[in-house]
Length: 146
Image (cartoon, rainbow, N blue to C red; front, side, top):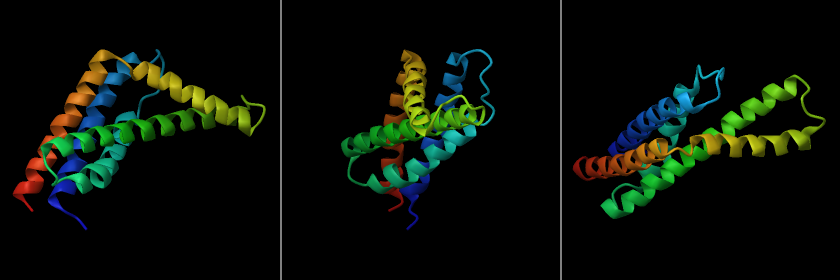
């Protein structure tokens, strides 16, 4: 059932995912193709903001911080999974791997490499502060438009 909290959570976390994606782009290796990175990550922010943050709103501000950080963790997980899976598939189409198990193992390695790139104080600080502020904003509007 659509609620104001779900709508605000979706919009706020989609914007946060887009912003953090733009912070990560300069940290990627030179020559990386980043064409759809921000919109795709914003889509994950939209879905997770609706499903996690929006559903958890209305239980108080302290509780909303937990939901905000959980939403952020879910966005990070799904984005890392998608982009490492995309790169693994791209390499598999060029016959880079000997078999499917090697490809899946390499996908886990790629996920870890992408996470290592994203571990930057500026990126983590912006993401955590944005998630906490987004959670408070969602909680505020859930109380006002309930």
